[in-house]
Image: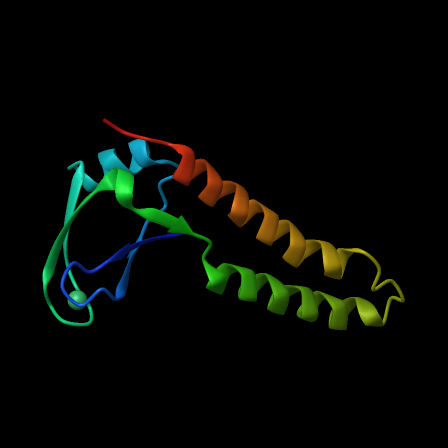
Length: 110
Ligand SMILES: [Zn+2]
């Protein structure tokens, strides 16, 4: 999962990577209830309240799931059951990612 915020100077989107399941865990991970990160586009430091960060699904994980499904499909082809498994994996990963981001976005810290 990644957390996005907009630079206060150039208004471009920046990302923070996290493994925290919700804002409270992110607060503990980050150590402060306000981020102060350098913009990747213009170098300006942006301060943002953790509550204003927006979680987004990690597309790399979803793409990884699709690739994994393709590999599994190729492997299982010889066995004759391409079946549900190859379709279920990417959908499962996608649903899981969405659940995680929703949980994060719903959570609030003081
Ligand atoms: Zn910027």
